[in-house]
Length: 459
Ligand code: AMP
Ligand code: ZN
Image (cartoon, rainbow, N blue to C red):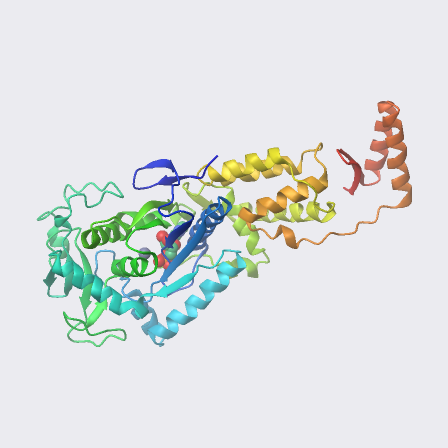
């Protein structure tokens, strides 16, 4: 089966068809570095990592770009309120740059611990002010912008299909309606491209521009940087669903306005991780970090594994009970692998089923169920299981290859019992053979009949 993905733009599952041969461009919205990344954010980066690994498995070379939002993301999505970076810097009596470096370092360490493959290009908004200004200039030349007392805004009413990504119902959001909510804008769905620094206050982060001293709006960074590193139209753009109605909608509007071409062909969104019945949120606080889990002695990969139990387009409710169970499950898999023989030829049947599930819009719950069926298949030899599970790990990223083979010493008398049992089986005396098997189990050893002969393991 070829790779199928759910495209938010068409609202359906589609076969992934690259734009330009085998080299594909992937842009994933990165962290806003004003606070610790939490396990909700990390769930999104794990789903994107699975997508990237699936693309590679399907023979594509992925150029992956991730931005780092270190300016311009305001507390309110309506372009009002404090800049998250500036207020965090103020609260911690640090510079915005120090805050950004501190949290970015933690983010990078977290993704490493979760075996999330690093992007090829990291790009920070503050390193691309020129590109953002040029982008806005282009929009201005084409007549898509207007000036208010606090900045340069994008006129969304000039776009006929504004809001198509999220299928926004624009009744009530169009010109005139609810404009009192933000008196500076012509239309509720207009958004800031460039904000002026307040007249009475010097911002830490501000730059000169053709319109006055200020800073870029949040959405422009992703359009300017994705275009710089991946071209006007690239293959895939990802994020979690909160980005769909505003951030990604506005990226599409401004990029299409400038280039007369869509920025990305596929838009793929992951659902939230919830704590209790609310979304885990960086700004609201009360979240759980990867370090919190590590301090409680969980393996970060247990969290990675836990995320596979819920399809990426379904809400995941985090609980420590579920994490306990994930931890036990991967420990048991590691234990099993440690007793398995050197890998031989894998099982084509299980591999086919596993990779078909992955290719079916990253159906990881199904993929791990298939992996467990294989582990528990008494007819499949451990050497074959080992080869296949190592292949599965190219997607799972659970470090199966690092599991050392434990030389479990089987005592002589147990080996003799197994040998006697096998002689009885060969002679067709299955009842007698079964009695020996039960005897072995009583003293803590199980025997498995595989294609390569019986194998003994500790219970
Ligand atoms: P931020 O650092 O807040 O800009 O978010 C980084 C990424 O995490 C974005 O793709 C968000 O959409 C995503 N995200 C934020 N909160 C959650 C959550 N509770 N569950 C899953 N993803 C989230
Ligand atoms: Zn973005």
